[in-house]
Length: 305
Image (cartoon, rainbow, N blue to C red; front, side, top):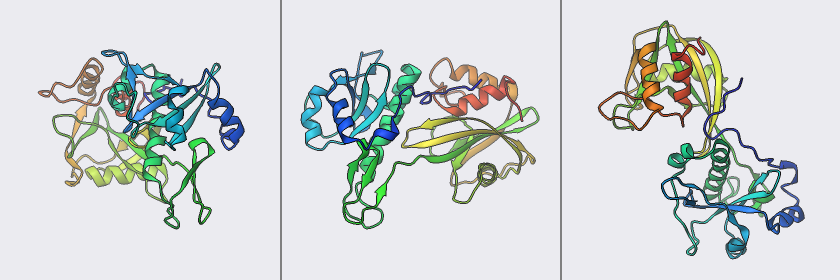
């Protein structure tokens, strides 16, 4: 069965075929059942204190902000209501506590974390794409927040997800983990990198592993993927076969890389699943990240190369 990780499993019908129907979108905005999620500098507003939940609000309190041109996104429908998100960064009134999405996501039901990923990625995309990449003119939001249209050259610009390959390199009963140079402490993780134009997934896996560790990769096996809204990536997870053993790290990216035994990685997985890092011990990412699940599945013999 397919495993769904944090930020995956969005339950909403995005109704992509109706986003350009302005009369229909207006009718949804007038629905008393409609709910809107405000994001303040990409941090969703929350309620609940020690156990925060997303602060889905009625649209009535956001009519003025919408009229002033705050970025508004139609997220989709469920069986009972439409859902929207709004960029509340410039709204001075009525704010509640906001929460970093990465920290908040593990506390939410899986489907809400997925909706949050959709909202955050889109709000961030609009904040960074206010001008036409073709002619430089200011663009306008259309299609209920899913397109930016240039009024000068008529170009249309669409949100994109950046494809990233992330992989656990396996050699016999050991697997390769690396520690990123930009991350302090003792946390190791799977190697990863952005795909380049003209690459297959397998070619990207082999190139990234060789660039970052010097290891030559043979077979590549796809396992699963995960949306990662920081800002908008699709993490595609693989197991791959290490054909060589000697490690030569890329000093620009990797502080350290090591081969770890299967039992050792299983111990990392168990500790990461039960609480925050102990800075005195080696660790891996928690269950919010697909790297955790690649390590879990291999170390527990659920998957192998």
